[in-house]
Image 1 (cartoon, protein in one colour):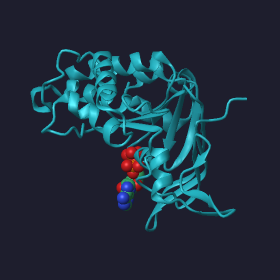
Image 2 (spheres, helix red, strand yellow; image 1 turned 30 degrees about the vertical axis):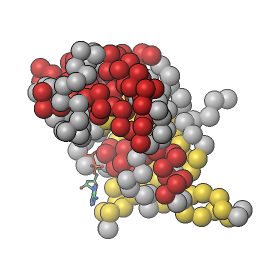
Image 3 (cartoon, rainbow, N blue to C red; image 1 turned 90 degrees about the horizontal axis):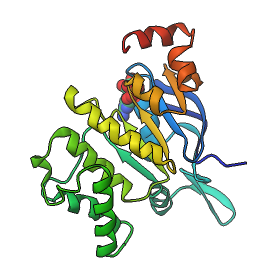
Image 4 (spheres, rainbow, N blue to C red; image 1 turned 135 degrees about the vertical axis):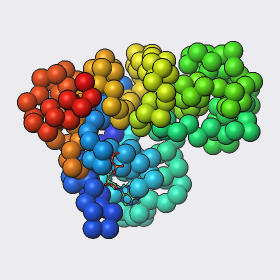
Length: 255
Ligand code: ADP
């Protein structure tokens, strides 16, 4: 049987006295597309931030491609992961944020080439070729030498996607990537995500309020509510056919 690429095992997370995640169990398989929906404050971003190793769980395990994020073996004993271990796992994970975080003083081609050269130690030509290929894929092959401030919000978000794809991640995280965009720019960004999703090979976790998009792209939808996965199933089961009252009333606000 195929092993999950991402596993959460009874993951809890508190900030001080506030319990934000209260026992998350989750398996995501290679190439699976998972949408995470739920009210503001339900813990969606915290899940993403934990996968990015920006937050450590209070208890429980997070396993990516067979490696525990926060624990490693040393001399036959389990010890807290060091920075090198975390860095290796981070290499498997790509992320697109709500705000684009592009380097303003670099062209969009340079924005894409930086990580392969400095993190993966790829040679410049390989990084350039792959960056051009990915910028082509997101429809920006004619903007290689533009600077971020010369692009629209939707174009910047597409650069952010190309920049993540250049690293060949096994898992891509998308955290409300369209929520900071003007409405007329949302479509072009979702279209690119759809295209990437169709290619298939990567697992994708998408935090989104775009229910039609989730229906279209996601193999599985999780409804997060007050720190637990309150409902999960196929997109149609969760978005169209659930009788969970809190879910139904949440969906009413978006459809
Ligand atoms: P969502 O993405 O579903 O809106 P979040 O994961 O951002 O939810 O937040 C869940 C809860 O955790 C919120 O109540 C938020 O205030 C709290 N929270 C998130 N990060 C921190 C932090 N670094 N310190 C304290 N509280 C936090």
